[in-house]
Image (tube, rainbow, N blue to C red):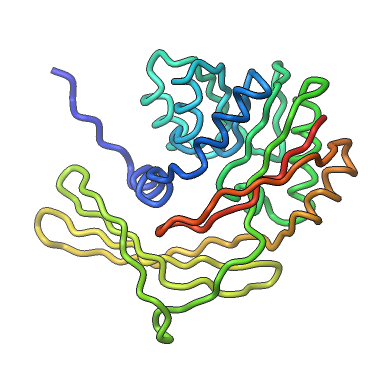
Length: 245
């Protein structure tokens, strides 16, 4: 008998906070159909985008720097045409050249500021074939709030895994040097009723479309289009900037 799969907590938190997001998937599907492949996804996580595109018949390479997330992506991929790469978006070297490179969910704003973005953009340019396309999702502004100061009390996202209840609730978005900090309250309750509470914070680099376009031009990528992904009740919308190699 095969043992039940028990994902590590990091995978559960990622799935809970990011895995249910679907609003951007029609855009990535449309870009893959329009520009062809193969497709390189940056910051693939547990496969939210990569597996969707592979299921539609595209050949996808999923790049992820967190080993536990990549292992979960591999488990979920099964026989789908998804190559998995454990690497940092700022420093990678692959044999393939791609028709389309995708950077969903503001991953571009998690690279450590301008120097990290420049390193990634140079890597992306080297890995795009002539005429290839880079599509990058970013958020220029975030509405600031703090629940402890009377801000809105947002709904928690929750799930149960192996008898443990996980819940995650955004508690603040505050300005920070060079950008914003998204704060969350993560809680677990196990089968015995024992409760744990962890405050998690993610720094999001401040970035405008114009700034990204200037940085991309400097490495030989030409901005050609901007499009948008609308807000949902749970997630902030984004602007997607598209570049030609």
